[in-house]
Image 1 (cartoon, rainbow, N blue to C red):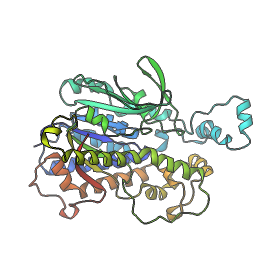
Image 2 (tube, one colour; image 1 turned 30 degrees about the vertical axis):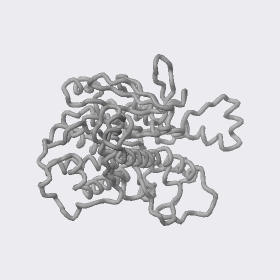
Image 3 (cartoon, rainbow, N blue to C red; image 1 turned 135 degrees about the horizontal axis):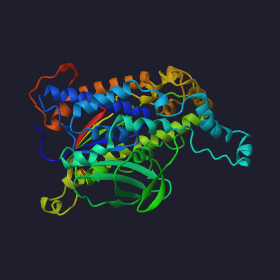
Length: 418
């Protein structure tokens, strides 16, 4: 029996790293089955996604009347992914996009400028635009919300035009748009364009035009300037939030031994990507915990006068470094992409590899995505007790393997206030 209130799912961004989220959802499906909970209806009434997490979120939302079918469909797609399904990975495609960028790092920049060449991105992701309509039907969302299967769904993107972080949302009941410093929300009918905008990794994929209050804006990845990843779920009415990350929230205290050479462009880009995709979530959780602790110190009569309210949050994030996993799969990248990334400094294998953080966002290859799915699955199973408590599922149901139960250092369960 689910506890009262609304449960939200928040899926963060991370390119190919989002395969981890699918493994977590697969484990949740199995845990719920073991608890003899209803298998058809989704446990999430609110779904919010960013970047590749937005694609996973919409895939789930569009089948929210049959959770198991949705999860199985996502697993089927991610376990057999190929780069060619997301971006042009052949030699000609890379030459048309990435080669133009690389000329700017050589004396060829003058020729490129003379010819008025204006490269828009490192890679062309038109294949993704062609793929998405066949994965799920966005036209099902209005009916699902009308029939009570879904309360709200949201996608985040970042406007290059205004510098604002924008959350596009749709809901079954009217919800007043919210506005914060450098953050606004827009109620809209969600489309493939919104997904393409939210997942347009900066520099890597081209910006996407969208209309905001009658004006044309160009948007990039929603992870940029996303200061509060959990905020949309709260505004949409969530009482509980499950957050599935795409990178470790905490790194070991020991200093990692890296090369002493000057960092390559790939290393710098990977560091910037990690800052964009991973840091905001950890900061948001810490901020919410501080607010919650402050509220707990207030007398009940004072606390009742504030608009802040407690929210239960469960965070599931990778127990292993995704960069290290990616280093074992660089060989799987298409030759043309591997050559282009090599020119930026992605090279080596295993512990001697460098620049793998950048490559991890582009490794839409089955060998990599399958390992991430497995990692997400085992991480979630290791948190079986926390998952059952969070959802309020059958507490007395025996687990499939009691050796996988117990607390996990990469998970947090807190009563938070926003």
